[in-house]
Image 1 (cartoon, rainbow, N blue to C red):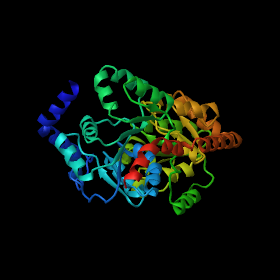
Image 2 (cartoon, rainbow, N blue to C red; image 1 turned 90 degrees about the vertical axis):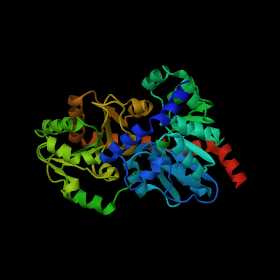
Image 3 (cartoon, one colour; image 1 turned 30 degrees about the horizontal axis):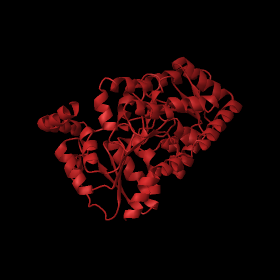
Image 4 (cartoon, helix red, strand yellow; image 1 turned 180 degrees about the horizontal axis):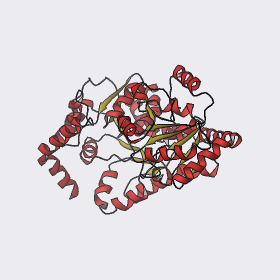
Length: 417
């Protein structure tokens, strides 16, 4: 019933969808050059051979798929990766391996979906996390293309929401031949909602290689920073930057030459953050980290700042809900801090806390105390950094497990090539 209404609405409301997309383009949320891709119009030819289509909604999902893409290319398969955001497309232009193709995912209108599938004719579809689009999934299933959910994620809160429309979500999840949850809890919740063959074989976000960086720029910044005490607030969301600036002010009495670096989750917010804070410098304006607060509002440089700063606080965890991936700074040996609202990484947080690889703070006051404690005790800082490195190294075997789970479908592709 709901699926029929959704499909009908996506037909009838076409003009309104077009107006909405034009508004998004005016806001910089759509790519004007590649916008036809959002209507299912491919910008490149389909390569010859067996094609695996992977879909990730945005930056985090796409990054988690990169190790899987490498393995698929090694098997001689053709790879198409889709995503829906401008930032993910920009990131994939830098990170996608040679031989893989990126396209924007079509907006979920039946005609645009049909156009996309008729061009690409995928032989296997790997769908990441929870970016479920009913028309897309229905057409893939109609075409009898194997469809597998990888990195499946359903939070306890989402579970409650989906249970209000049990038939709708059960129909979508029932189209997947295999549902691989990020965690055992995700796999269990997928099963409760109607997923078939729900398992947890590991979290691909813990198989991603360390974030890259420009080695020369890292050395230049290390020379500029010198022996100054420093810490990083990474992937911050609105409101958190002001909070971090207050923490900076609170610590200046003990650490007068303190350097606080902020990397906002969305780089375009840099000028907005500069206007909110006093006495700060902006990387996009060509400034260097020579003042008290430095706003690193550039794309693709988290790997640089994770290496530069010994202490990393992960944003979207004090004021907003969900958290950001703490595995990435741990992989680079940072002492990791995060707030109480880490619902997207519940199992990871529990695992890190159990071995001292991460510290959870309740509020702004505790954040200031944790940063001060680490900055004032080099032995404690070194111990926590080592614990984070050891923990991340021990968690990096998920890729092999996932590949074993995908083996029946990949072997079928090999046999048919």
